[in-house]
Image 1: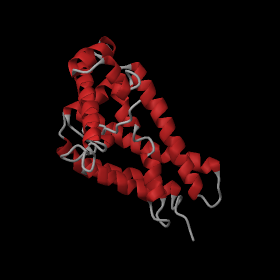
Image 2: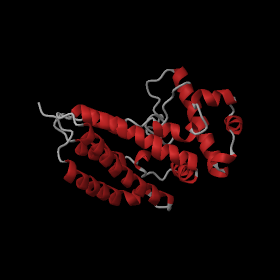
Image 3: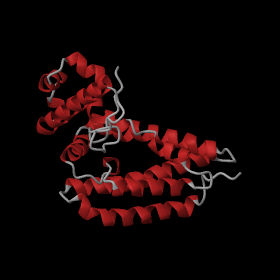
Length: 236
């Protein structure tokens, strides 16, 4: 299957940038990305209008003016049409910790990253009032098969990846501590993100919610830091 990274809002690798993340790509890759984005946007619009279970892949293909085979070339399953972009970020928390300076605790690295993402209105934080992002969140909440995959598959994958990265940075190499820390850190992010999503679905504007969301993030990560301390910071 062709792997084309599109962001959680369907616009590009990170959901940001006027060029949809296409800078530096060759013509062939740009066309592939544009096709993937068109299919994704078409699918989300149809799902939002009629419901996930009421729309067939064949209908999506027709509306996007591609063949059904082309849809499956970019998205292996119907569920991937909704969750595929989000699942490309499964290893993001692990990457943030991995790329942090050796003396930076895991909670600090993830806090800094999350606050920056909030300020950029990154859909991954839930603080995005773009209609397609809200449509995706509603779809996940209203569709059991999507909710199960999002909250079981995605969370389990992110927790495993972060746990492995924390274990690699742990001088004591304690698997239990790494797993507990990963669950606590991801739980903190998830709690904040879910509240932001709730506010967006209620009709609030992202810009209006931002100050409160930033304050909540500071408080939540401070609470996590009380238990984790400098865990994840390596010492030379």
